[in-house]
Image (cartoon, rainbow over all chains, first blue to last red; front, side, top):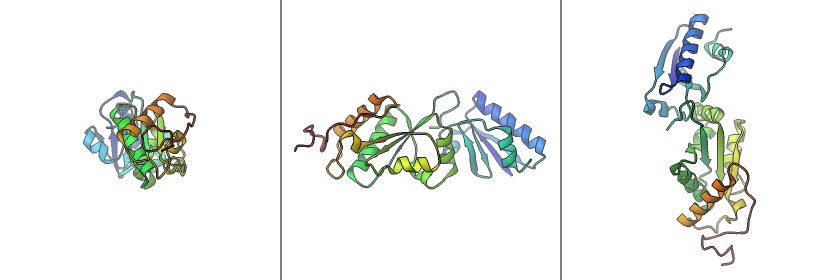
Length: 78
Length: 138
């Protein structure tokens, strides 16, 4: 599983990054997590609001920090 | 440009339809973007179901649609993904479909009407066509 956190470096972006990494660890799923702060790359997803969460190429959330339960569901955990 | 957290995300979409009023809607959205009123993004991306566009709309503080005519394709496209929106229909501002040649003057006038409503629906007024200011009599 490939996970990308899109954001240019603000507090919410960092918070989402931490939340996703903690949730990945908790679920035990094998995933590569990358923080993407290059605005050109962010724009290739059509994302207009950050932070955004991309899992295997699909944007799951943008402009907000999703709930941990939602992230778990996307990761295939309980 | 993507809006980072802490900044209000106000997104604007135009129907960009084939008719004159569709072209005006497109130019109005681009002008409003240039003026910093909102960030323009792609209605087609939402219609195509591309996740980045759909999720950006869902995460935006405000979504604004500009349609040329009452078919309101932009509004309906956003409604399909169940987001709250503010809708503007240019024929409700007096433009007549098929009788409204595109001009800078008419684009500017439509922009001013949208900005003056400040997020509320404007009261429709008399016919305007051609940008000549005759009120539809010419």
